[in-house]
Length: 474
Ligand code: GLC
Image 1 (tube, rainbow, N blue to C red):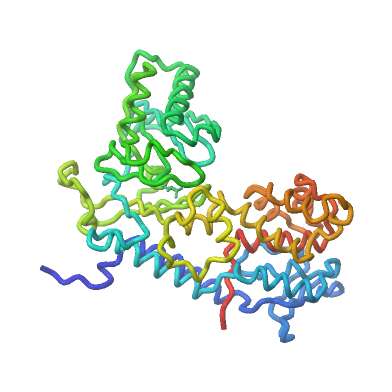
Image 2 (cartoon, helix red, strand yellow):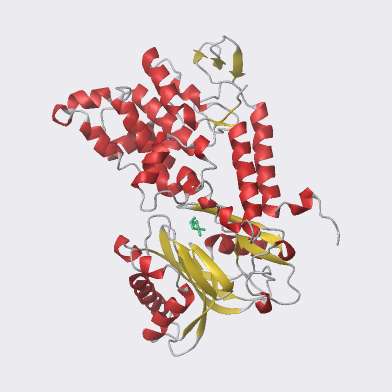
């Protein structure tokens, strides 16, 4: 038996994740390494000079500089707070820095996450340590990439994110594939019971087939993308494990989702056979690999977050039934379910009181901690929590308070809790110091009286929360 080195034992995902962090580390080394505490805009020379508190000039810019920052890894977004128009009192500034400081990510923090991720990946692949791992590392029974020789008309359902999609994919080896796709909203009332959900999606699928003139008397195959953790024992069998992203689906837990959906499909007189169940990460990897055969990793950064990757089949000691695998299979996609990292405490050093509040308010406290730290489902609320603390400390929206005497203190709070992740993206698109987008978002929330300093602070806070702002420790 050959002795494997530690390197051999590392999962392939660890290498990938590690190199991402290394890249960030390398880039951050070339970026300003200090928080900027004051700045000078030299209008005569049309140059912007940012000066650290110690007085050392650390960034210079040419006359095209519009005052806002576009690459968080190369520039420090704190400079948003420093213009002649935004006069933020020093006491407020210090308090703002205190409240928002946990959102400055250090290289040490990233390394900590990388190391924890790697450790939990390894433990999850081994039956003797699997229960100690936060990561489920689920075998998917997908052992091949697409060859582009696939052909035929295939239906697909894609559910579990913000939108639910019905698709008709026409594959032909000699031409580009044709995809007809429709997006639908799943009402919150259908996110509670699996049975209601499946009834709803099969009705939508039937209408989709009719609209696209498919002959309902013919048989079709269907691929089912279900963006939740499922324990698979074959390509078309998967037990639903954990709801996330605000879904409940209590009657589905422990059930085979393919069997359940298939039953509803037949009840509704459709001749559609589900041939594959995949996670959205796997769908992402396969879709990319269709055009780029070297693709080996799928990552979702959306409503939730997750990653999958190809692993050497001999390193996966948790495959329940190898008899269903082709004898030629050498690798299999593993669905890591990395959103669950931190459930046993390994990310506690990163977790702020704001994150704790998000977790407490969620319908699955203590679960999917990493997902709650970074994904789109929670970001709007996280920013709202921080901004509410700033209002509470009298740092922002003071004028708003005076204008709305009767709602003193409370109106901005309520308004802020309507902040969505999409609003944060809009705020991030501001490219000048008039903060047009920030003002627009605030207006939508009914907060029309924001000063320029308010806008600068709100823009800074939202950017800090949504971006990876790396600060060197030393
Ligand atoms: C959640 C699900 C996971 C999915 C991810 C992204 O983390 O558990 O299966 O891939 O969201 O949608």
